[in-house]
Image (cartoon, rainbow, N blue to C red; front, side, top):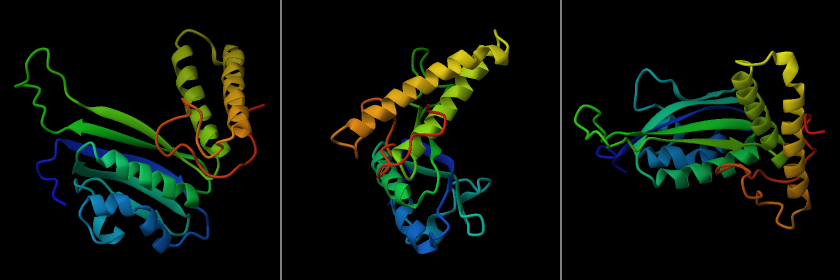
Length: 209
């Protein structure tokens, strides 16, 4: 598959803690949508990023960690590859994790563009994990971090306990709705982006009291 004239440069960035029994072969199968999209014949062949300075896709066997800092040229159909990858990684993940994907408009030239013309850049946050609870835990932690960072410009951190408690309450309600849903394999509306569904049940995240 050739992407030399592709409209986007797509950067995938994230770190996923995998189960200790996960093999390289299993990971290669899970990441098949990525390396095949890049035109490679194997994970080893497709692990290198389009940019030499980026580490690409790496599997730390000792710590069982998948690290991705990888760029590929492509178009909007890459989103389907991301969906497939996330569903497969759910099966291998030990903990919940966030994966950031940025679409950079490769055809946009800021100097030559019209004044009202904007780049088609896009950003997607994906979530993977062994259970819905593990995924919600990551979502909760990221939201709390963002909210606290924003509000600490105006309030002392010690004053924000009530705000954090309200966030926990919202996630607890969402988790309960998921558990009570007849379609437990599908997230309620607003749960997150592709790959956020997870598999199986699980306990409520530790912060969701």
